[in-house]
Image (cartoon, rainbow, N blue to C red; front, side, top):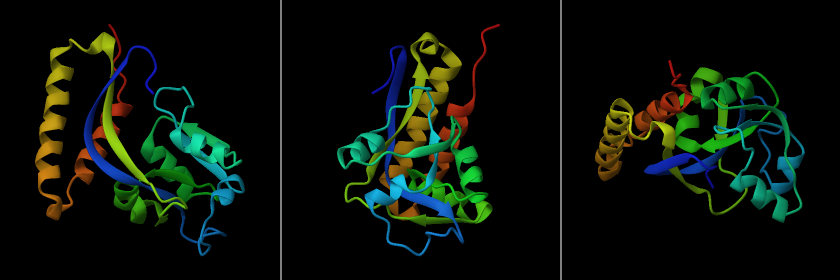
Length: 173
């Protein structure tokens, strides 16, 4: 759930992936939910709320992740994982796009339902901003076009653009 004052719209769908560096001590293992509690994690918290559907799923199985780092930036999370024994769980397409750059191994997570929605999120305070409204409409238009042609598998571009978008902080002047 989004915090008060946040708005969102769907862009596309993806699946979660378990991400670690190539050469990670547990890279060759078939992971279980319990393994999530054995290794340090890099978390991504765009809104600083720390809420996660994954953590709720793990808690139901009696597992709690230990966070070495929490960042609002997806690429920072991948860079940290690539240089450590930490792991993260995020969009498979996004991780696959950066896997070579950060020397990452991208694996399926140890649970069956890994489908996720990729959404654009913004503050309701900026909802009327015409430039941001135009940009949201552009992202949505591109996502719809790419989602209609799955054979191209190009919607990673939308994910990367969205990651950049979510990382930009608009300052009031």
